[in-house]
Image (cartoon, rainbow, N blue to C red; front, side, top):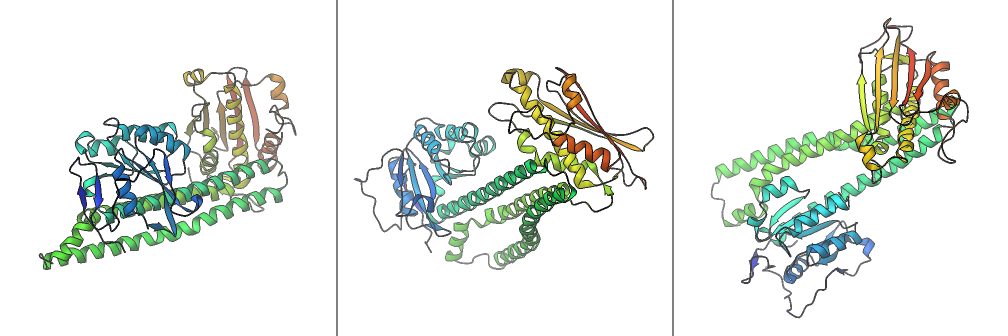
Length: 485
């Protein structure tokens, strides 16, 4: 293990630092060039990319010297060097897979580092790279305002970065980056899987093929749920262990107020007071993250729940919400279109006696169709025109006056459709979409599910220039109304 050391300040200014126990000396002849990429004898793909951004060459040298033999999960660091905010922006654009950045605040300008942070987060849309700000002039960039106003992951004064604390910060950054990459990959895989399932389900007319889709999504949700339950289940005992350990530490400190120089040095090194304050918060953050993933898993299971040979009670609001979760990536803003607003007007309705999996397929078809209609109408409107009249999908649920039927309305404010298109809308294989964009099966299958399987009705109301509304009317069921939702 590397022993903790203190930082020595240069007599020139307070930005340069070295580690006192470094055995290798930094040569004045060492030259570093802008936009330098320095490998430690490993292939680039095997190393963690770390960017050092500082206008002082000796800061680069000292940092690399301190981390020269550092590895995390068997992988070394691959150093990238930039000596100004301008160079850093160019470098991160070329290397978006950088794991973390040690970023000086004051360089060519007093806020050069902060400008780099804005560029990374807002222009490059890179939320994955971990950013640790380092400054030798905290008065020019107050820590509190920086943390509040900028998306950074840590803020350190150069004078407080001992080698051990630097390594601790690096490990924390790499762990965070690794976890985010893992989640991003899993999310991409899940999104792709769900997209593939969505494309497949249009041709699943028979019940057996429909259940295959549900089984696959259920398996995905199950695979997510197992490790998350393991993590969530261990967080509570972890909190208790931490509480007990901190209690014991406090008792030692009370009993032995003067533990000796060596222990006092160790306490100062790990910043025990801060650790006692921050570690419980970290555990709480992990719990919030695991709860969120468990919620996603539950929504997937709701969407993909298999149907038996008879109807069961089902909360259709849960089905609609799980569908919106799966389609969330299509509702988000992108470079071409603003976000699609979803307005939900849920009424006090009973649970339905229905086939939940099949109804979820209907919700998927209808909401996806509404999104398609909005995307099509956006092609003839400018970004500003769309902002002036935002894309909107309204979902309304109500109970009929006789309380025997539930009405579900899904409305978009797109361009609408002609009378001729309305007449053919539910016809088998009919589609107005370009080749490869639609199968002509979605609405046909949806009407079959609603009318033949549930004894309901699926209708369309539309007018050119004023949008489209698809309305579902389904009987509550022959038994009790169930619990109000």
